[in-house]
Each structure stands twice: as structure tokens, then as C-alpha cells.
Figure 1 (cartoon, rainbow, N blue to C red):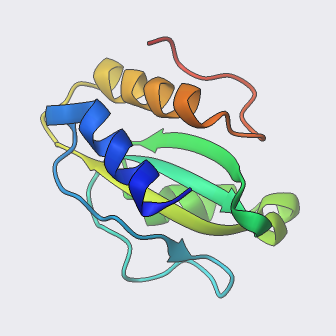
Figure 2 (cartoon, one colour):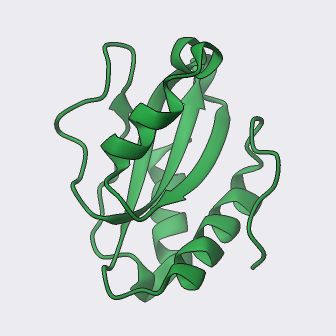
Length: 118
């Protein structure tokens, strides 16, 4: 995942995205306090080497959702960076899930079992 990839995804999602945060946040020392506090977001997690491991969406803060994920040892030890696409708060849940599907199908994450329909 690169800044270019992030910008392309931001453009693809258009008006669903509320702001641009074109950099990754390091997860190796825990969940960063500097993560965007948007309640709706699509997040992209990378493993070592920069490979996209997981794409998800949340209607709680990204930090809260990542804490839930990190309870699993495999994720806590393999996930090293996260990118966040904050989604506007007025966006309904089905549109948020569709945005997750669009991002996931663009990036082919290794750890997702399935992605929402687009």
C-alpha cells in the first residue's frame, strides 16, 4: 500500500470519504492515539513487507475496532500498519459496507474471509 494507492481509493469512494489521511499508522507499539476519530471508516491493515492483510469497516472509531481485532495473537503479531479512510457520518451502514467491498476488491487482502457486495 502506498500514498498513491490511498489517493486512488479516496478518489474511487468519492463523496463517501469525509477527509484524506494519506499515511499509515504504525501498530507495532499498540494502537496509536493519533488515529482519526471518525465514527465511520474503512481501514486497511498491512503485514510486514507492506502486503495488505485485511480490509474492514467500522461504525465505532477505528481504534476501538482495532483493539477488538488485536485480541487475537495472530493479528497482534502480524499486523504492523493501518491506513484509514474516514467516511462521512451521514453515510448509511449499507453504503459503508459497500465502500469496504470496493476497497477490498481493489487490494485483495490476504486475511479477509469475505467482503461485502459492491
